[in-house]
Image (cartoon, rainbow, N blue to C red; front, side, top):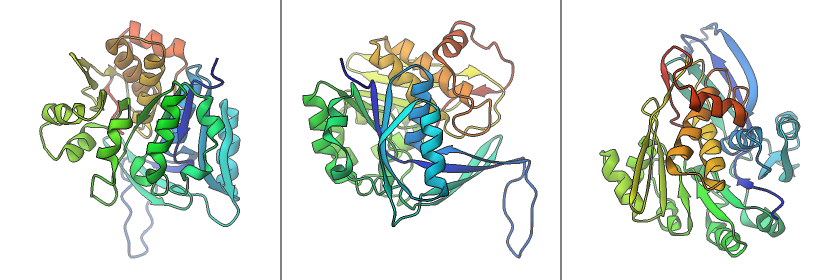
Length: 321
């Protein structure tokens, strides 16, 4: 039996979440007061890993941090949530990346100091770790500048070991929307963009057509679409999963929590309908608490939400990151 259900390759960095109704900064040395500031687990990969572990999966993560306060914070917090960090490399010459999240109810903005976020490369990923996982997931593809070239070999190795693979691209800060990703999709089993990312990658403004174009490259496309829920498409199936009614506090990491839920269902061989419902429940529940991880549900909590839809009154919540 495989040692891990899920191996996550990607970004390991904290988020400093500044939350309030008016979090737009003003220059000219003006000071503005926000409702709350919280240092929390950040990075798409780290948030997904924590969400999957919370659901009961055996999870390991590979990434790079610096030998500094932020790096030690991440290692301690991941371990406390049951994520195996043996694959995280500590680089004594580099600083851990950090993202400042300006979060308000209807939107958010992010400022990132990249640091070690993009330092993971194929040579730093232990082949034994790849061979010990049922599924290998790559987070924040467009931030993993050093890893991208080695991913075909990593995915081939994972497939030879009997594992499945997935990618969540996240936003492309360069605005190019390729970077080798489209060619790489032929080696991927599950692709997990949000709606905007899917349309940018497919070079079309119609979401349904974007899904068709992406499905020509990858067996299973799963698109997160915020309050509208999510859509999954594979050969002969197109399934739309509605979102859940929750009173949103902060959407940071909700898409990563969705990924954790969807992949948990996928690894159990659930139907697409069930996978989407689990993903949408995990994404929605994560928005009830500031930060990306503190609101992540257990499997029992996610299942209860799935079985009692709209149990919490408020604005409809989904996952779009």
